[in-house]
Amino acid sequence: MAPDRVVSWALPDGPISAAEARHHVTEQLSAWHLDELTMTTELLVSELVGNVVRHAKGPPRLRLLYGRTLICEVSDRSLTTPRIRRAAETDEGGRGLQLVAALSDRWGMRFSATGKCIWTEQALPSPAHPAAA
Image (cartoon, rainbow, N blue to C red; front, side, top):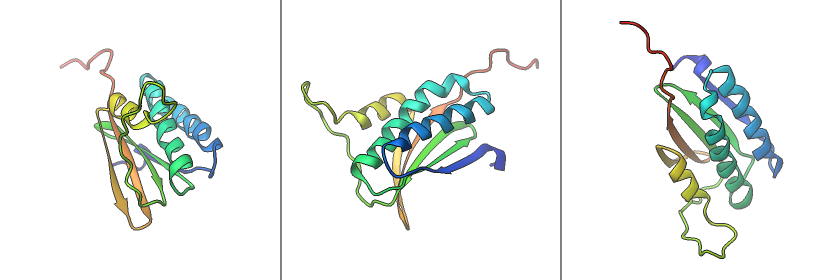
């Protein structure tokens, strides 16, 4: 993958990290002319980074990879496996990974030597005007 198609940021440890992650996503997707994916990617990143702040060991790290699809990765220093919860109607939380699963084409998790990475994958938008044959 070309170096200009991979970006990574260390995020602060704390609630401000989700806002900073959204800012990075907006700027980078605009630079890649993928503005159509901004709203969904911001929401995915907010959920994943928020989970690190609430349930894992920070600081989080964000990485975007622009290839045949858009891959968004959020890493932390925890070895705890996230799981989709079934929230009751009256629960105020517990739906984050359900949202991630609904908004992404695929998602998953992998462990590393220093923690874990949750990743999402989104299809790229169709070109408005396909190239002439």
